[in-house]
Image (cartoon, rainbow, N blue to C red; front, side, top):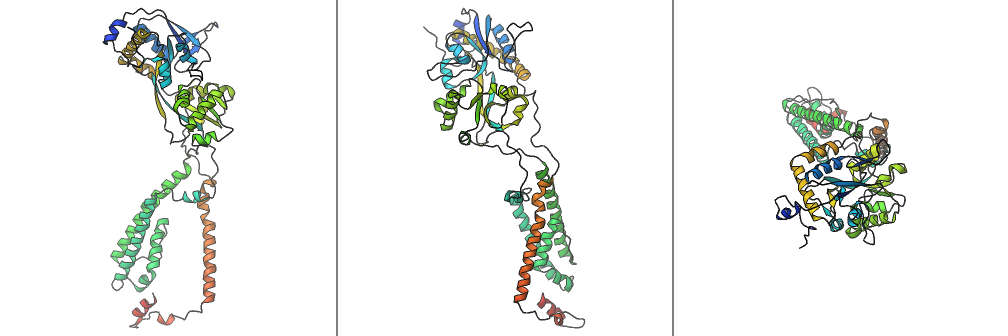
Length: 469
C-alpha cells in the first residue's frame, strides 16, 4: 500500500509510520541550492573551481543530514529563483527541480503557499524562518515649509484639541471668578480704581494674557481675588512650559516625509513606475490565482516582464529606487540592496506586513526522506541548535540606517508660521483702526464725562463712578 504524505503533518519519531520508514533505504540525496545570502552562500574556491558553501541553511543542513544519516551531493543553481508556476502548469526554479525529479531536497526557505504545496512536500516540523513581507517605496523628498493652512495649524499641534478646549474653558472660568471676587470686594478691600480697571473685558484679557506671560497693569488687593490670580499664573506656567517644549520638538525633530504613493491602485496608474520582487517568489503565483484586481495585475506584469525587475538585479541596473515599488522582507532588502535599503519605507500602514513561515522543501517521491528529515529537524530545534544558528546568521546587522527622527537645527523656514503672525497682527490692527476711525466719524462727539469722576467729599461720587463702569 502506498504511503501518502501530501497533506499530513510532520511525523514524530514515535509515530507508527516512522517505524516502517526509519530504516528505509535512501540513496544519495540530491540537494539543489541557490545563492541566497544570508541563508546560503555559493562562492568559488580560490583556485577558481566550484564551489564552497556557507550560510544559515548550509550549517543547518549539515546538522540534520548527520542526524538522519544521509549521504548527499549539492547542485548549485546559479541565477535560478525560488520557483513559480507558468501558464502551462510547469514550475521553474527550486520548485521546478523537485517537481521534474532533478533534485530531492531544495535547500532554501520557501513559503508553504497553496499551489506550491500541491506540487512539493515540506519539512514542516519546524519553520526555518519567518519573513515579514510588505510593499516598500522610496521615501518622498522633504519640501521646505510653506505658509499654508497646515503650517498655521502646526502652531496648535503641540497640544491636543481637547487640551485647547479645556484651556479655553479654564481661562473663562478664571476670568469670571476674578471679576466676581473683585466686584464683591469693592467696598472692603478693592479701591474704585482697581474695580474699574478689572472689568469684564479687562479680566478676560488679563487671564488670556497669562498664556503668553503677559504682565498685569493692575493687581487686586483682596485675598480672594489674589488667590484667583495665583491660580491663573500657575496654570499659565504649566501651559507655557508644556507648549514651548512640545513646539520645539515639533519644529526640530525631522520626521519622515510621506511616501509618494500609498496604494497599489496609485502604483498601477503610474506609467513610469517599476515593480520589483525576489526572483521566483511564490506570492506571485498566489496573486495570479486568487488575489484582488491590483495583485492580479502585479502578477501579470511579472509574468510578462512588463516594467518589472527582479530584486536581485536592482543593484546591477543602478539601484535607483525613486520610482520602484518593492515587495519583500526587510532582511532581503538589506542583504541585496545594502545601504540603499535605508531609502525605503512601507508604502502604507493600511497594507500590514504579511508574516510568512518558511520551510525547506522535498520531493513527494521519497516519503521516507521527508519523515527522516522532519525528525532530525525537530530534534535539532529541541536541542536549541536551530535558535543558535538563527541568532548567528539571521540577526539584523551589517547595515545600520540613520535614525529617521533625527534632531536638526531650527531653520528660518520652520518659523514661517510664527513669523507670519507679525504681519498678520499689523494687518488686523490696521483694519480695526480704519473701522474705529470710520465709526468715530459717523458718530457725534461724545459728551464730556469729567463731571462724573469721583471727587473728595462727594457723597455720590462712588455711585456715579459705577454708573460709568
